[in-house]
Length: 382
Image: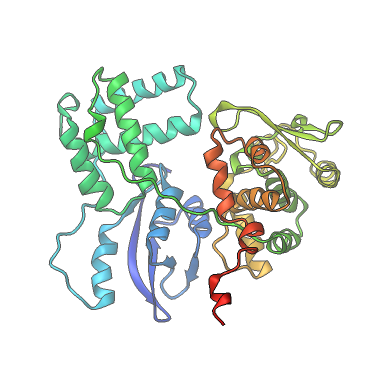
């Protein structure tokens, strides 16, 4: 998919509920991604996928299509006035469709990419940084890069990121990419104190009960699908870690799963039960993967993240679970269930591959083991 592909968002009403409708030219990959966004519902009458009208949907859409398509937010803001029946004397936000990169800017982005690779940044980080700086430079396509200042960064923050309601994580990624780009390619530093960073959001992880996890796994008749989701939950993997597994990463004799070069380029091992090893053996006998442990329809090709998300969504629907479950929920559930069963937080940190213990400590806020023992002072009033 090229960067010219645009997804237009509009406000609509569906059965009396305010929704966001996503319209675009037909593209199989785009359609596949639209299906995986939490709350997705297909409307035959409107001929579009629509979602709950809230900030979470905007953030999810942006994350799903980053680097793949542009979201036209202008139509959403205008159509919201029509749906609500009110008018506001406010200027329309700038469109998310930006001019193409100039030849000069394109060469500088390539130079930035080469530098990132020379420093052995992961491909996902390289993509995030180059996509971010490409967006920034497209916004200032009529301005000489050598004249871009901190004031321009603040303008971009206010008139593009905030006006289009993009996520705080994207805002931080943009800031990081800008600082690194100007330091390495332009040989000058922008003053970080003048760059407006958003406050870090502190959200609790979404957790499923053991019964819900069991229902999801039992709803999968396909051996490959059930095995993939079982491994994610049983070992607390990120989806990229699952997709990058190879058959040799299973050490049956020691009962370990080896996760190589995960986030932060760190290897780690996690215990793998005999029950899961038997499941993997049945899967391996049936599908006989050649390179990757879980391959797509074509041999030697990795299973796609989009297809994996679709598998989970179908399982949740079949299991009657209406929560907007994502693959990362299974990892969160693994950590929380370990904590509730008495596993030391330091061990959970190692199993998840967290660099900081503070990242792991968030699971103490959603564990019910201690919370349910707390007696409310209300109970002593009567």
